[in-house]
Image (cartoon, rainbow over all chains, first blue to last red; front, side):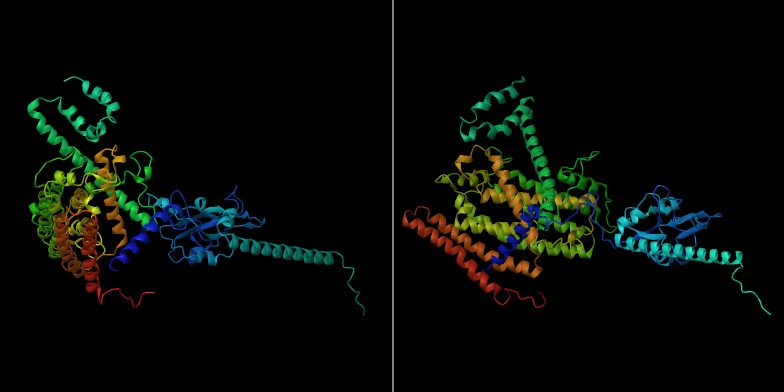
Length: 205
Length: 423
């Protein structure tokens, strides 16, 4: 009969109205500034610099100021000045470090190319989205103190990727140590050989 | 005059239950309050201040009701679409939100601070006057509605006629807005709006004529008085509980939806299809005034529907008569407004041809048949015993039969609609 469809429709909307009060599956709104969604692990934007130790962020930056990211950055938002001297890095090896490392977030397009090219796992993608400011010049130009975040934070936002990176770094360091040990052993052996010319067979006529 | 006014309030309080419903303290509270205010004035001024007070109360009560109906509409629409609706507006300078109850005032401030753009070619005077005239006529209709037992602002013996005359005058303002904008789209939209409003004027008027026929009066107070009393103390003698009254109420509410430009008849200002129809060239507070007038029209038509069909301020049963009559009126009004919102949330908008066809081919014939039905009802007033059952049977048949037949004939080949590409 005419009008039954209208009544069915009214029933549907009434069911939605009532359901939105007691069925959390219906009312899916997350009231953003107070409540935040858990971001997916793959979510990424804006790079940050990884430090080994949160208590001394500037002393333990992984970055060695090789400037590859600066050269590769498509919108050229990275600016690096190398240090004049060398400082020991996390493994104790003396390295250059960035005296100035700045990223202009108003220019950065979150392309992740700096992360791809970095040979030292020193720059990684962050998960920030509340970086709006009222000052569009200096407040959007982040210096190395603002960019430096600990490895623990990296583990927090990208756990799988960070674990891989850590495993790789550990393997590299172990290989380097082994190589250094082997080299040292070889060197020591060579030095020992030079020091004791006993083994030399006597020349005979 | 002394300060005895407030003291007499307290003295009368215990007597409220003992006195009859008409004399109950709460029933007379608005009158007592008004008389207490005007008793401070010299005698010749009292009638004027009485009228001004009525106007002030109507404007403030229905202004606030408008504000909160907009909020309720947004919240209920939100809930129906499974989202919370506006809930963030805080009380100014605090962090107290109270479910967004300050939202209407924030909206008001927003529309007041917006730029008021007037097109260069527009007729400035008429462009300004259109929203004012529309609002003025909408507010005029509030004058004759009986809000309670003792609460009729103006007692006219042709109150219903006055109500619909003032309501019909708003169509002038709609065309005024379209023409004064000097925009061909506004003008065309105003024409379309007029076509709709005039099409639905007819079923609207034909729907209340049976009430006048049965009640024998054009006065709103007498129509309400004709619906007094109860059957077995539970079934009130409201017109909606008769076959012709139920049909008339349904036709009246459908026509009222169209007259107040509410969804699914909101073609004049179809915000998702047109820019804004005849409101295209309006901005800021003038635009808000149009919406105010729309909501006032909706509230007034609901109030008139209550007066004509839902027993006015009468309580549904003598057991709940201790609740004052104006509370019953406002309760019925809220229920009808909720219905308006519910319908808006449910039905998609009609096409222009469907709209006019529905009015002329369906509502007008049914309303005319309903007029005959009401004539039969009032002629068979003295039937009793088994004839009373016969009377109901005939009347129900005269409502249902044409509805089913006409519905079948009109929807033949059209409905139920098959959507070829829908899943």
